[in-house]
Image (cartoon, rainbow, N blue to C red; front, side):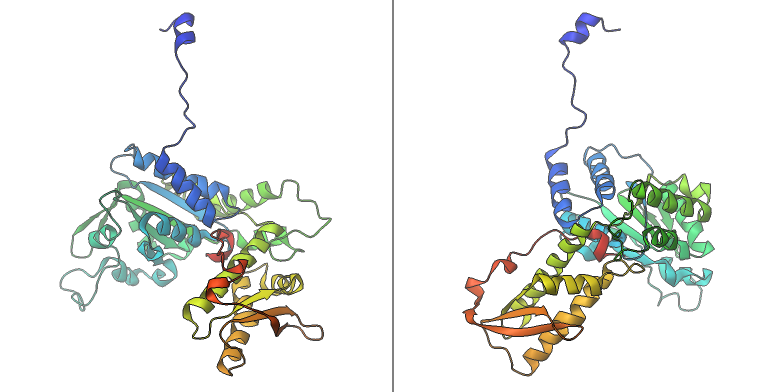
Length: 373
């Protein structure tokens, strides 16, 4: 046993320090995600353990359950991580559990056994080749996402229990799939209605002014976790490494989402349109989009639809009727007499691709709680 004198001369190690690659991953993830610190931390911790080679043998790299109401970004954060690590969000193998609510539909996932009608025409969704498609020489890691897990059939549940515990999956033709280099994500909307009740009264997930918010995050956390425990068996919950609750966003975060989405629209105009132009939206116009685009039942996924309806569709009509020319500067404001936006040209300003305003500096922060499932 070390003496007091020996301990005094020994330097204490910093267990909070992260590797350079983990720091880069965290920084990149936080640039894409706003307001979901617990989820970001869970992913970064898993990446650090995997990079250090300390993952548990014979198990997946991690089993994460993401809880929260629809539109809160549970799927988006997985896609964002895939974009950073693999270069493409489509690298995620996604299983929509709503398509597997009946036991016979499991053949679409693992294939039919030999001898069954249609065996040769059935191609399993989860295969070793599909998992390895995202592997590189530097990073041999895969993402497997089960969306809306509460809708899964009993047959899928039985498969999942084995996958989460032993990191193996047996296909219909008896081939075995190794999941030991895979992070398994599961999402669920359980507790969404109760969380909506907690947040009722504000714009979407924003509490109204004057309404106390003390302890709100804790209530949301407790509501989601309790809903999961009522639905899922202890056998399932014990196989999870972490259950992460996605929390409502604050007003300033919702405004940040709007800026990001508008910048993405500007990028679409410049990259895809035969008539490139730029636009600016007034503060009143932005406020209108926030009012129209945030819905308590659907999260700020509704915001993206509002932008498509009130900004993108009118822009398409203006382009289709040749009311815009290349290099125009368009000003968008709240319509003074109608429920909508007013569009007009700024004749004193011209905007060309090489002289575009600040709007072209596309923000990289994508508020995850708004853009995903």
